[in-house]
Length: 423
Image (tube, rainbow, N blue to C red):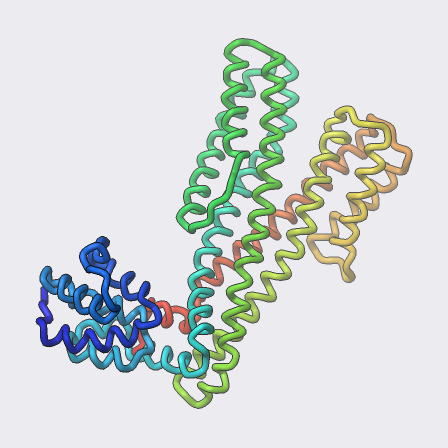
């Protein structure tokens, strides 16, 4: 442990007060890395006097030297602060490498102080938002695992000889609830708070199914199975919307960082930072375009997924519906599917869907009255399966984007966030 002494603290006080004069909160945040209650130990006075008092207090417990690194991190481009801290305690300079200091100084010379703060905030947001999208993806995958079980569960609930199957289904549902809970914990760690009412509704419905089975109450059992199906539908819709919105939010800091880094391409030309800057600009541009495309297609499949659920109920499961429901729902679904799959040339993933659309269109010529023929039910069931497989693939593209962003994080970002040393 090292004590700086009164003479060194006296020299540092003026430099630090000047450096943090317009951002006193940043100074106290750095001090709190060593003493969480530091502000309570220093009497209110002019900022310069408070700085000296804080350093003196920390030096008594040999922590003043330890706070110099966090102070540098808060002002990585300040040459005067760096020089003073280097003279007072050279090991503290390791907090900000020479290369990062030079890059930060170049950014400071190109951007205004407000722009520089906005840039740094956007870089911090990227990581949090990517973690949030990944958490939503975990919930979404768990719900999609459960979705095909819903018609099986509803039909088993209506046939007493099949009630033992329900215990297997509730076990599978509880397993996926554990995945959802883990994803919710990841979401909270990312600092994204959302109301996820469907989770409690699912847990309550599963408990109600177990209770109804134990009591042999068929009415309660059917009600609970319906409530569970409704909660899964609500969950898929809620998570899809949240994931899509968060993915869109994740694109904004990339776009913002791109806006601020583009002017640096010219100012860093011929320097050792030119390759870092141009590499990041190309990376951010590509990622932004890929994410926008994935978001656009995801939104289309999200709307279709709701139509698929209605088709599943009234065509495949032959549940009662109002007159004309099949015609109306098929017409809406057909229109959306044609928009998604109608591009020429037809993609490999779209080809089987296009073929099924043609066959189902022949079978479902209006007016269609339930029940539809078995061949049409089979085709609609296969169409729903193919469509949802593509929906999952689109979701995977979002997740793949996140993976590439994490695994191929540009050196520029790693350098600015202090994750690598190039000095």
